[in-house]
Image (cartoon, rainbow, N blue to C red):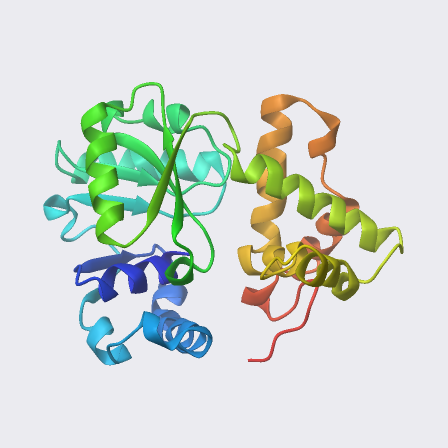
Length: 272
């Protein structure tokens, strides 16, 4: 999602540092930015009125934290894994300014828990963007127990500048969107595993029957099945309810490298 966010920020004129610890990810970042640009342009051309080259001029690729001491906002989009996030925020606290706003783009992990990793938890807030970011107006804003009103006001102003609509919710793992969405995806995976219907037929019921633009299994492929699996694990750990136990099919697919769009195959196959 970091790729989408970088494009969305750049199209509004923001200067962006796209930081990744993986050299391999950085080597392919420009091509992935171009691919996502073409994907969004194909669906809704008016979203990107400027050529891709103009947007890329506003995005700097980085393998370290150079420039982070001058940033106003850090949007974190790493894997849905608390230990990885804990290590990352341990690094960010040493390189960012005292007034930096930290937007946590997490699917399920508590914002209050993330905030506790920082010396100023009042500057930490959840900004749960939806895929694909340039085409989705909604951002689920999650207020942690320590999030200040000033941080909430700054977040609203920032997201308004991106043309987004904010819905502010209180902090519980999964918030609103993913407490519902992850259960829906998990149940649809069970339908496929049990042989009730194919993935295509399950999604058709949602698109043709419920007028959803994208079915839950195509949505899962877009998010990444590894992220779905990690999110269900966080929800199960948090609530201790059996309904959050992942369908074995999800575990099998992730174990076999079928992660969705990013691997070329998940519930559906993808060209390129």
